[in-house]
Length: 266
Image 1: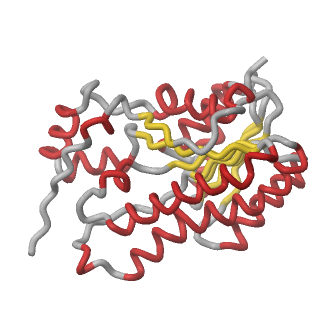
Image 2: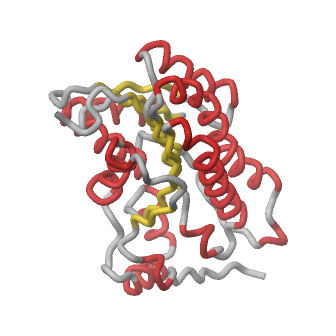
């Protein structure tokens, strides 16, 4: 039997990238997974591939079109999942908007607000709505996807950095307040090949090569094979005493930091 057999998981932004890698890893372990994604085409395509590859693992996968920047939509996602599947055991807050680049003094409020709503408020709403279900079951696993960008304060992404660091603080606070109920809250800072990374490689190949050259393992991770197993562990019974941590699934890239030195015109 899989380690997540009959567990119910919600993964926001689960249609591609790190989110999809986690969905696939959960499905392989027998979980019932709900993919929350804004784009229907992406979400439905993800369901099709997961069903094809893991349909015999004992779980299930479904897609719910969700704009996590909208509070009622997030709360309805959690409520409908609990109503249809009977429980919520695992919540992975992974959705994030596309990140542009701007100098701090030129940062637009709408960019800041979008990052905070999707990276912080969406997780807050989902965690609040999931809490009573997890408390009643005496079991809950909250996994929030954070970022080395915020820890290292990368240039020109203050809106993303700040929102991700706020999410880490939220994760640690939930760990302290909710641990007594059998609910653990942990953060993962992943470094994996995603559509965003592939776009960055095309936009700034020189910087991309420099990042890989400075990486201890000379590569970025695979979302399913390198990040997925960590998420499975943190979602499982085996991690019951792991709480309030930030784990870097990045092949050691955080040790000396990333050579992130893009230049913007004055």
